[in-house]
Image (cartoon, rainbow, N blue to C red; front, side, top):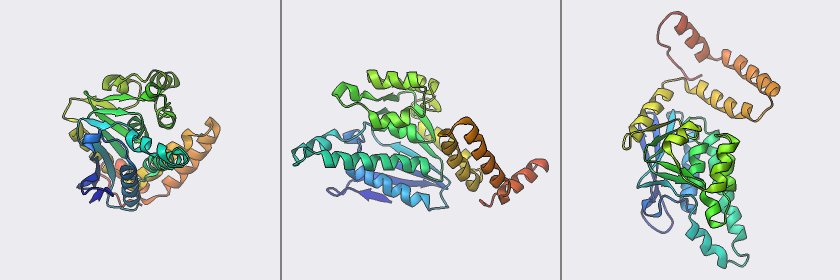
Length: 271
């Protein structure tokens, strides 16, 4: 399924399938895959559809062209300064839609893997930080360069600060400097940097490994991971203990434990 823009027949988002893996491809290479309103809506609609598709067990988010994503479409935003309110209402609308889409990634039942082939800056870096896992080409770079244009990367900061330490996040936010893939892996922004050109294959290998697990267990585990992270230590343990108890009652937990004891491969039923 390809999602079309309102003004052209060129799809801004491509949707592919590799078995039980959904692959979403940002497709505005001439605009460095910047997040236009149309692309934000297309991503949101795709995630909404995937969330209810039980045949999809993992998602890869990647891009065409030399850049992964350059952030918001600044030309589109600037054009609205001629609005009666100077663009305020439109700016708020776009930031709300974008923030909602980022949260869709986190709340999606299926794990989402960013596959980064080039520069991911500002909201592009935010996408990477919002994904559950990330594989990047050794040629990829990451930045939150809003300070360079007088626009602090406040919304990207939310995802970034939940991935890397405060000092690393603040350095990226305050300097706007590019971070290469090797350093991005070191500070925890991505899982691994791989040889240029091999990132999609590596992301697919990782996605298939994840997809081989019980989708029911992955769903409750992903949800629990993010929920416990926002709690204090004692509250996190209380919550996680409840999740573990419910998980133990699942059919796939019983099957998995029995398979381990009996030294055989488990047969998941995703329940």
